[in-house]
Amino acid sequence: DAKTTQPPSMDCAEGRAANLPCNHSTISGNEYVYWYRQIHSQGPQYIIHGLKNNETNEMASLIITEDRKSSTLILPHATLRDTAVYYCIVGSYNTDKLIFGTGTRLQVFP
Amino acid sequence: EAGVAQSPRYKIIEKRQSVAFWCNPISGHATLYWYQQILGQGPKLLIQFQNNGVVDDSQLPKDRFSAERLKGVDSTLKIQPAKLEDSAVYLCASSLTRGVYYEQYFGPGTRLTVT
Image 1 (cartoon, chains in turn purple, cyan):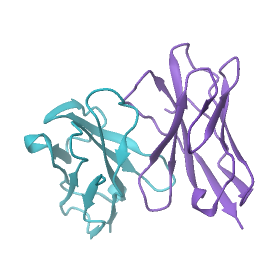
Image 2 (tube, chains in turn brown, green):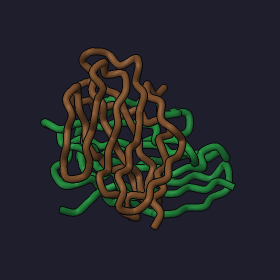
Image 3 (tube, chains in turn yellow, red):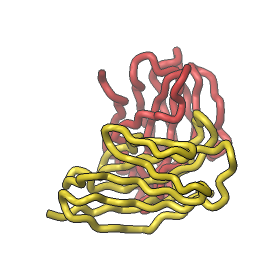
Image 4 (cartoon, chains in turn brown, blue):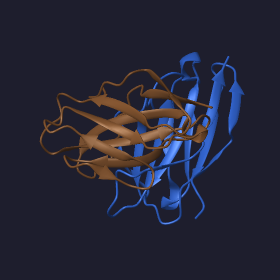
């Protein structure tokens, strides 16, 4: 079973920041948080990952709380192309075992 | 670089028939995965190959599902005989052998409908 909890759906206006929460209260000290997204009719795509520090790349930012029990994926300026299902996954360092939950369906509207 | 290729994209069969899916991973990716994604759920790993050897097939229903990866490149997933509950999207993914295992590259999937 997935070790994360995410809201089933969220809306965001185009151009605004999309903040997608994830709860992982049972995360262990050496486990990372990985984010993937799946656009309709495509396979999932890796976005970002982190351990305890905030991370940023060209796609998104990841904010992990100090107690590491939750995190937020931030898309700073959401576009219509960001409409997708976003999956938060907890796993060991450099894991090849991705256990997907049901994710958050983000709808970006004009 | 070319992505993960899968075919066919869509397949409709009747229950008890057999079906096969093909996957060609990204060149140089030694690790290959097959996932099953039922509507409304996240992908679930069925089998993982490292080159042409099986690393993990614990979630593969071996009474009806089989997979092979000859020569450590292309892979085929077969279902025989199919059941109604096998209706799903079958995703193939690949990753590098060394380094970044968590970054898996997925193909577009094959949508199977069993009637």
